[in-house]
Every structure is written in structure tokens, then in C-alpha cells.
Image: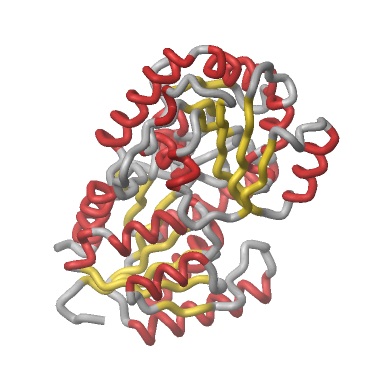
Length: 370
């Protein structure tokens, strides 16, 4: 690492392609790389480590850093992270995701290094079980004492942190919306051509509740198709549901796509049916592509999707409401065009990667007292 730059050890549980990993990617690629050196620590190779290679950012693998709670495995991971802190000698540690956020803050305290924690959605948010919410809240209240600064990716998470007494008057915290780089624009969302192309970029996991979306698709009328980009442990279950509802000719499973830009540009409407979220980068990518969006009213989603302006919001788990909202956009190309333009405007105003990077660098400086 360049001694003249701020040395940042980034710790994130998984290297798989998801919102938090893309957030780290855009930080590494941002303009603040002129005054910060990064070293990434993660639990295995994947999307993020490939990006590290592309950006010539050093990374280390801690094989015991896994999502599942396992006391002895977590202890081994903690020891490995502590050794890496001693080896890299960072000025500060920046942690992402629940497990990395826990172990990274403990190791940082032992090593006497300040830790910045980016919250990509609290584990005690609505949508999780009562037991998980209660345990996570208790843990975060303890870990807050080990946190030099918090970054919240949504105002929703900030408000929830204040409500649950995690973020207090003497806590350093900032709301910094996720941001992504700009790309060429197609603006197909206003097209009146058939079929109407629906799209989602998701993970086949409990959080995303893709089954709710599939049920909504079964209720739609008209010439419509749906492409699903993503992967995950529940993929077989989702495909069985598609088959059960006789939607094989409607739904196309595209698998994991590294660059979703072309698929988004070829689509008309973006759909997200999550049960809980932080500030989903998938929606920001949809806004960048100028797509009207139908999404569940959870977490920071309303900070991206303004109801009746650049999309439509429905309640969590309401597949009938989801179907009604999608049908409205299918039947009304004029509304699609209006919301398409509004989506693009929202992206340009609020979700630029350079703004995110610059604000994050300011948090680093404030944390270090610079």
C-alpha cells in the first residue's frame, strides 16, 4: 500500500455478486482511489475478487469467514482477520455485511484500529423472524461500542437505527445512498411494442420472495414475458413454482449475469418483490436504465421508487397487489413513458457513484480526525 494514501482494509463476508459487493466494487473504482489504498478481505473467491484483480486491488481469502453462525469457525476467522490487520497495517477498517461487521469490529478493537461499518439493511429490520430481530438488535447494541462510524445506505436504516437506540447523539453516522456509474441509455420503458418485457435482477433467497413475483405473473393478462437474472439456494423451488403455474413460456431464467446493462436496456418494466431490503442496487440500476419499477414498500425502496412518479409500490407479500400494479403498466404505455423518464431523472439526481465515493472518503477523513 502507498503510505501517502489512507490505507483501508475492507472486510466483507462473501465475494458473490450482490448489492454489498457491487457497492465495494464502485468504491474501489471511484475517484477517491487517488487518496485511498484498499485491501479486501472476503470468505472466498468470486465476483468481487475478480473485480479486485481488474482494479489491481490486493485481496485476502479467509476461508472460515462464512455467513452461518459457528462458534469455533468464527473464532478461527476472527484470528485470521486479526493477523491480516497486523500484516496490512491499515489506517482504518471498513466492514460490510453482518458476519464481517461482527468479526471485523471485534478484531479492530483488539488491534486498536477504527472501524467504519456500512449498514446494507439492519438484520433486525421487519421481514426477519422475531428471534433473529431480537438477537441481532442485542448484538448491534454491544457492537455499536466498537464502531467509530456508521454509514447507512438509506434514510430508512438511519431512522430505524435511531429508533432502536443504536445511533445516538454521540454516534458518528452518515446517510450515503448507494451510487453506481453512468452508462449509455436506451429508454425502452415507454415502448408500446409487444410483448411487454418484465425483468428482475435478484437472488433466489428468502429475503427476495421471488415466489410472490411468480404468483403475480400467473395473474397477468396480455402479451407479456419475464426474464429473471440471478442465482441462489432456492432456484430449484422457484423453477418448480414456474412449472406448477404453467409459466415456462413466459419466464426465462438467465442465470447470473455479470453486466446486467443490456438486459435492462432491452426491458420495459422492472419488478422487485423483496420482504426486506436496505437500498437495493438492482433498483438503482433499473432507474439508470430508465425503467418504470414495481416494488414492495420495504426498507429504503421508497427512497428510489416514488409511488405514481417513477413506479408503483405495493405491500410486502401481496402478490395480487403486485399483479395489479404490473398490469397497470402493461396496459398503459403512456404511464410507462412518464415513469421511465422520471426514473432516469431520479438516478441522475441521487444515485451517482462519484457522489457516493466522495462522501465515503469524507467519512474516512472524519473518522481519522483529518
